[in-house]
Amino acid sequence: MKTIDIVTRSMDGEPVTAVVYLAISQANLRAVFEAAGEDLRYAAFINNPEDAMRTPVSVLAVARDLDLPYETTRRHVGKLQARGLCRRAADGGVVIPQGVSTSPAAEAAMETLCQLTYRYVVDLAAIGVQAPARRKPVAPDLRRIASREAAYYVLNQVKLARTTVGLSLSTGLLLLAIIRANALHLLSDAERRQAHADGAFGLDVIVPDDMRRPITTYALATEIEMPYETARRQVGWLVEAGLCERRGKGLIVPARSLMRPEMLEAVSVNWAETQRFLAALGRLGIGPAQARKSLGRG
Image (cartoon, rainbow, N blue to C red; front, side):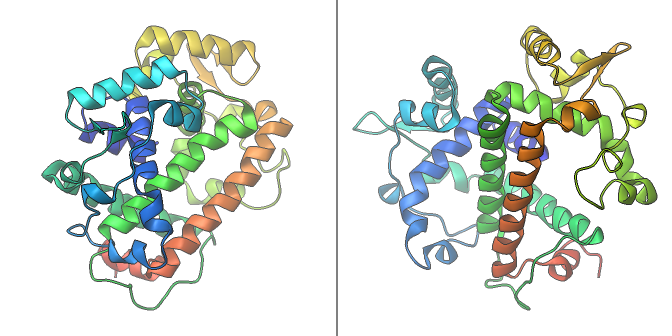
């Protein structure tokens, strides 16, 4: 959610537009980074594939990739075009130009995203989740490649909500935001956090409902920059589907919902994807020790 927020703010847009932007960029550069060693060639911020190397992607392909309605995708692509963040190629496909990802706004976003990624590595290591890492980073500047790995990680998380729980992009973002808001306060309490980090998927591990802090629909819409009426309609669907419930004036995702088979499957797939992400960072030389050093923690 923080990564999407960073990208959203960098383009002065909304979360779904930010995800569409990331999906276009990934499609544009997929062929480049599938070549052996090419990902390391573009590790630093100043190293960025030229426009001629970018493969245009159709709006329909982006819609299918994100499981969004075509018209919705086209509307968000139009917003990106209006802001000068993507352009149409000769074949009708869309491309994120090189200049967009080398702008001062892009550099500031990448710097913030890298710091966020380093904190994530350190926080996971604090609860015993880490992957082996090279002793030295593969390059002095890893901002572009680290940001790229983080962006792809987020895209995979977004798609996870669709493939395991069957949620649309915007509804999946809402559900994640509710789960995060319900338990965010526990992160500052090491003892309680650890009590709900160990073990398998049993009810004794999942945070009890009375410890969850409800979030209002208005606060939810504000947090993820979604129109209130859109958030209200989709929250209604989540309540009807039994994935979240109302507590006073707010909303929680209760333990019984988190124990549903599709939610447990999402946790399992998410765990595997998180391990893959940490391993990818480790190969770059971004492990807990290096991340703490980059954050100035020794």
